[in-house]
Amino acid sequence: MQKKRCLSYASLARAGLGCAAALLLPGCQETDHVRSPAAPTRSLAQADTAIPVIQARAVPLRSTHGDHDRLIASIGGATRVLLGESTHGTAEFYRERGRITLRLVREAGIRGVAIEGDWSPTYRVNLYVRGLGADRNARQALRGFTRFPFWMWPNAEFAELVEQLRAHNAALPANERVGVYGMDVYDLYDAADFVVEHLRGIAPEAARRARTRYRCFAAYGRNTHTYGVAAQQAPRSCRDEAQAVAAEVARLPRPANPTQAEAHFAANRAAASVAAAEEYFRTVYTGANAWNVRDRRMEANVEAIAEHLGRLTNRPAKLVMWSHNTHSGDARATFAAQQGELNLGQLMKQRHGNGAYLVGFFTHSGTVLAAPAWDERGRVYDLRPALPNSYSGLFHRTGLPAFTLPLRDDPQLRAVLSTPMLERAVGVVYVRDRERTAHYFPATLSQQFDAAIFLDRTTAVKPL
Image (cartoon, rainbow, N blue to C red; front, side, top):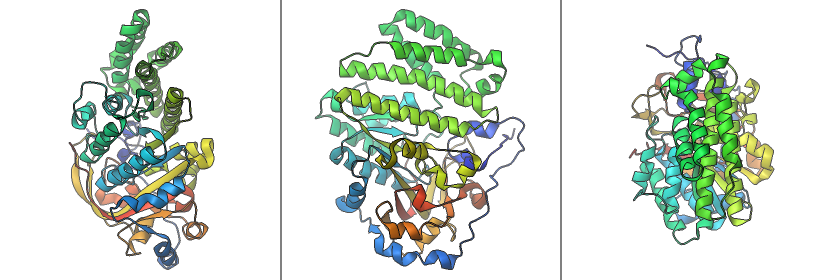
């Protein structure tokens, strides 16, 4: 049976950006691509006037330790650093984000890494990097990611960073260790199990109440989409139950011991994750803007993580966030704003101003790991060369193989990149034969990001 899709612009192949429920809205016309907005009218000749400025300002990436010196200096004392990606399946994006993250951890006091992943499996990784739990290596710790997309976090490139963070933490006291946390909204049933199990050991009566309330979800066979459809009928909604558990867990006293405080925080955010997933999957079937629900919930998770880490050390915590460019950039500089859609990067800018630093990642061609449709097996695709009238096409014509553009501190560079062009976004699904309509959208790069990293030819991630 063909799935029905009803995709707005910012879905963008939301099919490919991890938003499964957006593909299943009832009553939508069947289609297999997004109707993309018209291309910006800037001619290639006009766009190419930027090439000499880019060539002069670009900081080459040569796979040396000093590659990111300029970027680290530009980030400075930022407390929220968002590292994007234009695909969910490119090895070099993971590798460069890992290099930047590790330097920020070692040199700039970054205390937490929040990823576009679910709470429960990511918390298992957090236990490993903190030297807790039963897993013996990163490969084992990443086995908690058992749902599609199966390669987005259990891959060799991310596993390398996980091992490096564990090694970094080994010499630190418990309250100073760097954590890894999930900030996305899809985790409902596993998070509910986590809450009940945690409460069983410290508050048996609260565990009993949580288990009773969470039974509301049991009728849907641990299927969030089945729940989302059913919840449109008010008596079938489990909103009150999910919120009641989250409120009760939030009222539990916070332990002073750092390890116990971490477990307390985990249960608190797991309960919040159930409430977030309930809201998201209920909203996505109403025709309301579920994208905004998702990114507002990610913002709330990030700020809760920062508060928790700050309380452990009695000083403000700095975080790095890993998510797609469509989350990490400022949505106000893209066509999404005209659709009434916001995103994590915009919310961080509005909350923290220049304390939020947004980095976009781009490529021209190569290979990418993606699936042909949601919940199907991933495969390695040849990534089509970027369209000439896109930012990646422009960067390719500089002839430079890999570079960083520090936009925030360079008015001339910002000026030459201030006219809208197309931007490519490939998520976990790649509609290769309809790439222009499924994976491109207009954006103004100099307003969307504080820095851009371009790697001309890239390769697919290596799943574990």
